[in-house]
Length: 475
Image 1 (cartoon, rainbow, N blue to C red):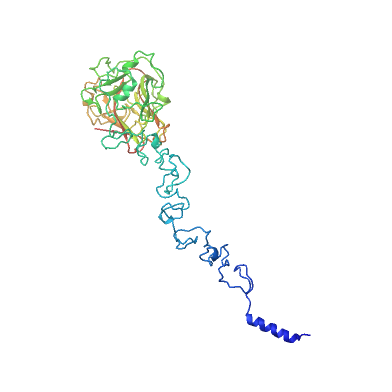
Image 2 (cartoon, rainbow, N blue to C red):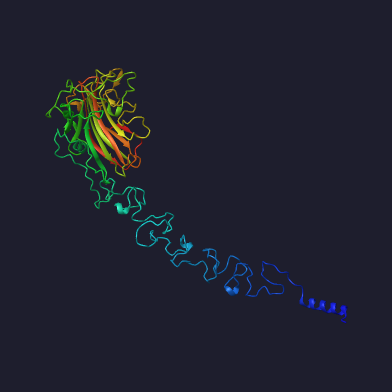
């Protein structure tokens, strides 16, 4: 029989010789009595042992299956390369590669993924932060045109086939391959009684005619109408109300080209022209409504109601605005026979320039008015051509320009504004698909005698924005 005491002592000696054992822990994957440095063991629990390629078995984020994180100074994926170009496209994340696991994505890469189609693929291939730009089928600058649609500089919103080619700047804004080729004068050879409304537009400097299906700027449609838009063909006296003239009187000359446009509630002629009628007594014998329902009132004449429009005439133009035009202007000079007798009365002739869409900040479409919001009539502060200075209808007229511009016009002894310029603000993107409608109209009020005539010229586009609608004297 064995000695129990002796056996217990022997067992104790064996345990003491082995030393204290380390309890088993799942975190170190080490069995009691095993060496923690053995390469066959996964010390960090990432599924890889040193024998399997784990180059840092104390870091669970480092293993052959880990993603290389550029810029952290660690060989995360244990391939022997620190912060490498992961997809072999020549760029690391530190060099701007926004997806270093896709070899088709890197700075300046083709935005179609390199497939040569030029079509968008929904990926920011060139790592510039914008998806599918720099493709010929994509409008990069937001001007409404892509390269395949003729945009010759898709990084410039002011260069495209719908732009106005600004003269004398050596740039090809309209992308037709020829810088500075805009036709600026187109009214040579037009007859005084020319009935084509497109030629009336040419007389004021609107030379370009646009097609409904095209993209170019210009006049889309033009028509002669009564002020309210009615067809004037039933009135034989209507045509004399418009004329294309080479001057108006002895001193009022053209502002651009060789002709200007005249429209009149009487005869749009100077005394030397065939068809001239005395503005003091010529009645064309018809009535109409007001233009676009616009009912002009004069703050200078509170409580005064104007009469029914007589002998009205209007040129209505539909114009596609150049994509780079932020404003436009035209010059005009208004002559009235009603001065000085019929100030602040129902017999108040009007000239209006109506714009659709109505300009922002305005409650009506008229863009030509004085600083007190008086429409252009005998009752406005811009009536400066007269003599002598006088008070009429309770309004003082200083007549600073004298009466020279009235000579040989038929309006001697009466009044005119002198040359004025109306400037209108434009937003090509906010118009009716880039199209505006502009109506120039004149009518007698209350009766058909004591006429008014306006001459219009020098239409200009500008890349500079304007503040609202303004009308000011010009030299």
